[in-house]
Length: 266
Ligand code: GLP
Image (cartoon, rainbow, N blue to C red; front, side, top):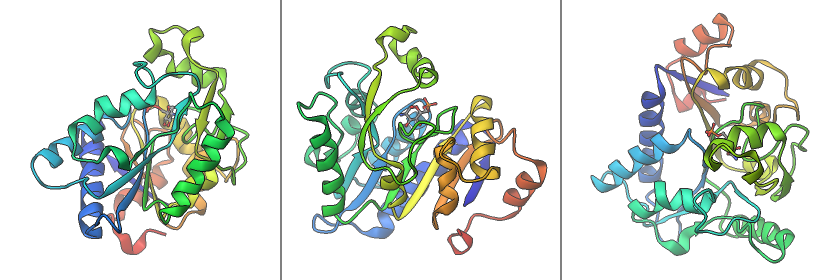
C-alpha cells in the first residue's frame, strides 16, 4: 500500500484530481471500452470533484467515455432529497461535466426489491469488465463505503445497518438531527472494492488520523475495514498532514522518502 502525504486538503484534492485525469487520458477510453470509475460521497471528495470539474471545463479531461459506479446510497431517500447521494453527486459533479447520464450508476435506495437492486449492481459491474479505479473516503471508525466494523472482508453489494457512530458523523448533512439520518444503506461490499484494479482512498483532518493509523499500521481486521487495502496490489492512501498525525514518525519518514511511483506501488 502506498501512502501519499500532502500538506493540506487542497493539495490532496488537486493531486487526486490530476491523478484521475491522467488515468482517464492514459486509458484513451472509447464508447466500446470505457474507463470505469468507482466514486464516493462525503465531505472529503468535494475538493476532488471541484478540481475535476475545472479540468473538464478546461478541456484537460473528458468523461464522455467514463462509466461511474457510486459506492453507496441511503435507503429510503428519493433522488431529489438534498441528502441523497444521488443528489450530492449531481450537485457536486455530474451536472458540471460531460458524463452521459446513462453511464452514471448509483444504487437506488428506493427500489422495491433492495436485494435485487444490489445483486443487479454487482452484475452490472461484472458485465462491464470491473472497475478500473475506485476512489473512496474513510469513516472515523475505518469504514470504507458503508462497510461498518465487523463487515465480512469478502462482502458484496448489499443492505447494511449503519452504526450510531456513522449516523452521528453524517448528521451534519441532516441539519444535525440524528433522527433524520437513515438507519439503512445500500453499499458495495469490501470484496467489490477489492476487485477494482486500483483503489485510492482520501483522508483529511485530525479526526481521521486514528482510522488511518489502524489502516496502515494495524493488522488486517474486519473492525477497520479499510485495513484490507493492505491485501491489494494497487492501493494508495492520499492524506494531509493532519490525517497523518497518528502515524509513527518512522512511517511518515518512510512514505515521504519514497517518491510516488507506479513501479513500487506494491
Ligand atoms: C460516509 C460514506 C463514506 C465516506 C464517509 C466519510 O459514511 N458512506 O463513503 O467515506 O462517510 O465521509 P467524510 O468524507 O464526510 O468524512
